[in-house]
Structures are given as structure tokens and as C-alpha cells.
Length: 83
Image (cartoon, rainbow, N blue to C red; front, side, top):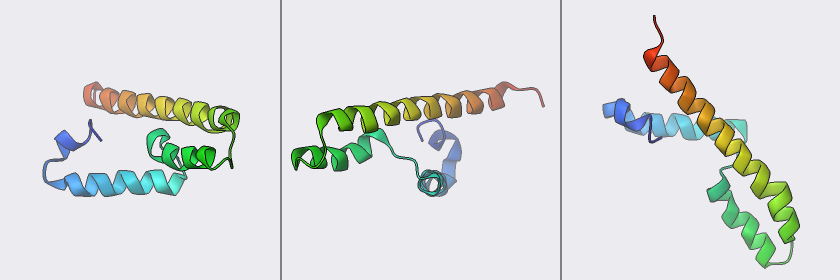
């Protein structure tokens, strides 16, 4: 969003809606937003710390990093690629 909104000008709301829709459509989880739910499960003793780190935090963080870097790389490449 930080990379897309400055170029969006008057369409910022539509950029936010489109990106949020794509994340939801793909079933992707954001490491920060979803951690609240999973940590509640840890606090309620429904989920162990090992499950939190091994089955949620590490894979989700890796996916967020890989997806974010890929998106930024693609956008930056598109800006400098010859037409």
C-alpha cells in the first residue's frame, strides 16, 4: 500500500479496496492482523506456543516477506522496463 497509494492520486480508496479484496480472495493471512486471533488462542490455552510459532508465525511471516518483496520487485521493474 505504501508503494501504491502515492501514485494512485484520486483513486486511493479503490486501490485499498482492490488490494484488500485480492488478499481476502486468495485466503492470505497477514502476520500482524491475524496474530491477535492466534495469540488469543494461546492465552485461552487452545493453542500451544509451539503451534503458534511453528504452524502460524514462521510460515505466515515468510509468506508475507516473500509476497511483499515480489510485489515491490515487480512494481519497481515495471517502472523501469523498456516498453
